[in-house]
Image (cartoon, rainbow, N blue to C red; front, side):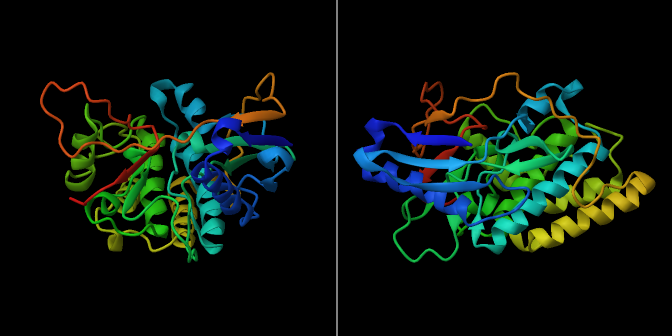
Length: 310
């Protein structure tokens, strides 16, 4: 097992304890092959705040992409991974958990019974749909990693829904197939403007080998209007399986994913007790002057923002 504990200095602050335990609560709700299993969590004597989860050996999807030529995967391998990620999210949504931070670093690649398995990890900003108490992220806050945040979360401060994760899965699919995220910018606010208003660049312009039907599906996942996306992960998963059968024929992925996934085990696993990193809350200013040195969140960093929509 792996044991995660909150830094003692943060364990004295109620908000950090609440966030830590909320992440554990979210993860503990879901029991599925494609979600990391949380075994126990709580507060021990002396103020120790901890969680116990299965120990994973392998690498995350970010590491896999960085090891590939041009940072991308072929459709056969990408489809196998996406089916598994959609399966894990389907299970989470069925338990009332919206992940809200789907990205390569939060998709861990391991093996079980000699079969490749993707595990969703890091439920640190997850939303529990049936929460009735005070939200830990505050009123009207946007959370997530900028490049993967759905447009409606920024533009209208809409509540997170399964379609929020559908959009993030679309960004992930785009990145896996092209080697880049749909939008890039030097400033956070320019990135959010593109996410909200610019059309998604063609996948086939960057990777001509992508089947047209696959490009059309990924663009549907990335629709600006959430109503134009698939309504839930069950639909997404079914569409992925159908696409694999349509485009790959005898190479179509099995429901549990592609056997072509190669996992590189980590030579020395993580220590049995790992200290949790402090949670960072980004609160960018409403306007950044030209030439400003204001520090803004990078596209791959989790972000919390309390403020108005666009």
